Structures are given as structure tokens and as C-alpha cells.
Amino acid sequence: MAAQPSIEQWDKWWTNYSAFLVHYAEIAQEKDVELFCLGCEMNSSEQFEEHWRGLIAQVRDAYDGVLTYDINHGREPELAWWDAVDVISVSAYYEVPPPAGLAAENRGFCIHGKEAEAVVREWYAKPRSNKQAASR
Image 1 (cartoon, rainbow, N blue to C red):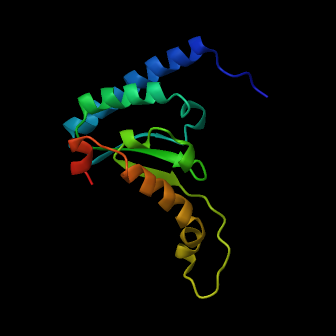
Image 2 (image 1 turned 135 degrees about the vertical axis):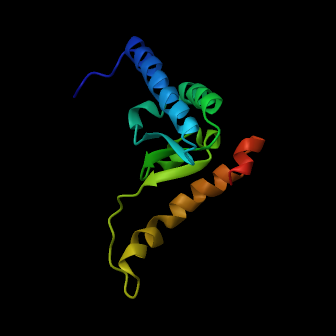
């Protein structure tokens, strides 16, 4: 098993990733991009709530469109900062068993939809800024 990054390594990573993301947020603003994704399945970084919230604030200073973060399926309830983004995105690589009479493209959501729905209901119940509320 690989060694976990040190605090110093994480700090350097956050500095670099923040600069990277703000740069692309500025481009997204300039190009009038409708939705900007902060990251995708960055499991090991998701625990750093304060860093994510700070980074999201920096991105919002550069970009006034809709923000999302894409989480790996099954981890939806674990993310503590859903309220800081406008859209919940999930990489849903669920096994799709074949319920009788249900179209193939709907099978996974039939089974896992209740889990995702619980996260969305909790998230929508949290207070949001006017900007976040307007994007819904």
C-alpha cells in the first residue's frame, strides 16, 4: 500500500489545484460556459471540507455560472459540502440486474435511485445563497 501524502504534500496539492481550477473558471466565465465541474471522483481529497469550501469560494469569485462536483457512486452521503455546489453529479457505475419489464437504461436508477434521492432531499433542505437558489 502506498504511503499517504503528508500535510505539506496536501498543502502543495491544494495550492496547485486551486490555481489550476481558478484559471479554468476564468476561461469558463470568459466563454460563458453554463456549468463548471470542480472535479470528478477525487475520493482522497473529499475529506478536506475546509479546503473545498475555500476553493469553491475562489471559483465563485472568478465564475458566476453553475458549479458541480462529480462523486463516485456509493459515496454520495459521505460528502459534507454538497451545499456549497449547485448541482450534485454522480458517476453511477452500478451493476444493472434485469428486473422484468423495465427498460435497460432505467434498471440501475430503479435500484439505486432511493439512495441518491435521500442525498438530494437532504441537500435541498440546507440554506443556500441567492445565487445558488437562482440556479435551480
